[in-house]
Every structure is written in structure tokens, then in C-alpha cells.
Length: 265
Ligand code: MLT
Image (cartoon, rainbow, N blue to C red; front, top):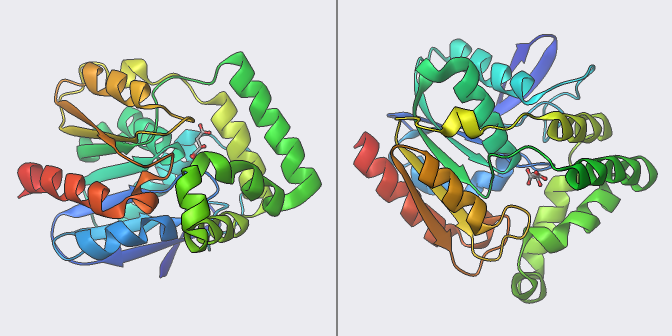
């Protein structure tokens, strides 16, 4: 893992393989480690960069308030450091919201996008309230409490029962997040804007994937995003909940490799 410093915060990232750059952005409370199954396969053909967003994984905790724009600008700064002008971006859930912020702020740097288990709409009133409840839970029970509350939405019941090692790994990754990182992220999630206007008519190639059993960002959300995108394609990943790339890595990798092969060569 390498690191770079931006706005007085040290951010960690992985940088593997050679060729067309692919940037992977993790979901809430996780880290670049969630992409391990994708990094292993994609880096045989492409240069794969996966970043720990500020407050997550091995990156420093944030000191002030943040928005999805903060994360997006951190990634733009990383690409500057690495001398990368344009890249293809993949984001899961909150990582998808960060990619959408990146599209608003740095569109010229985006060659194609891969949006996994995410959505384009802002939080509803109930969703905003749930963020506040999760902030309270984080203060009262720490990351262990957050991880335990989130696990049932992350993986299918069959995987949680049949593959306890994966469930434990997901919990461990979430528990690696810092309390300020999680609280600031929940505030940023709560305040994030609607991205419908960002995706509507966007002409860059876009792949949208969603786990068939994802209740947090259901397949209907993914389908709606793909329908708005001029070059959007949508696929459902069977037997997967919110963390489709971790739960069904082979199926997800097959889609990513096909899409990248067609779009990047
Ligand atoms: C995530 O997985 O990044 C979050 O659950 C996204 C969300 O809650 O909107």
C-alpha cells in the first residue's frame, strides 16, 4: 500500500498492474480491501488503483465536515500525484456517490464508469433520519455496533450462514474505520445531492451492476440509472445482496472484464 498527503491528511491506496488506469472506490465503512477479488483479476490487464477514502481503512481520519465532493477531490489529487489524466472509475454504493460527485467536478477525467449496488437519488426524510440513528449508534456502540447493524444488509442470509468467514471479514473491514470517519461520512451521505441530472444523457460508457437481493440499493435503482445513461447497461448479479463484488466475485469480475475489454481493449 502507498500513501499520499492532501489537505494535511494522509490517504492510502493500492496501485497494481499496468495499462489503462481503473480507479475503484469502496462503499461505506469499508476500504480498498473490499476490492481484493477484483484487484487480483483486473490488475492482470489494467493498472488498478483502489483508495481508502479519508476516515476509512488505513487513511487518516477527517478533521472537519465533508461532502461527497471532498472524497472526489481527494481522488483527483491522487491522480495528479500519479500523473494520470483520465481513468475509468468503479464505485460501490457510497463509492458510487463519490464517482457521481467526481463526474460533476472532473468529468473530463472520466473515460467510463462502473456503478455497483448504488443509486442516483438523494436520501428520503426516513433515510436521513436513519443516518442520524446510525450516528447515535456509532457513538454509543462504536464500529462493532455499526458493523453488526449493517451486516444483514451487506450479504444474503445464505452467505452469512454458509460462509461465516466472509461475514467476519466484512465485519472486520468495517471495524477498521475510525469513529470520526464514520460519523462524517454518515453526515455527508445524509446531505448528498440527487445525481439524476448528473447521469441523465451522460454519453460515456457505463456499466451498472446490482445484487439481486440488494435491499439497500435494489436492482430497480440500478435499472433506472442505466435507463438514463446514453450508453448504460444494467445487469443483476444473482445470489448477492449489497456487497455483490465480495459475495459473487466471479460473476462480477466476468461483467467487469467484458465491459472493460469492449470499452478499453
Ligand atoms: C454504502 O454501502 O456505501 C452505504 O450503505 C450507502 C448508503 O447507505 O446509502
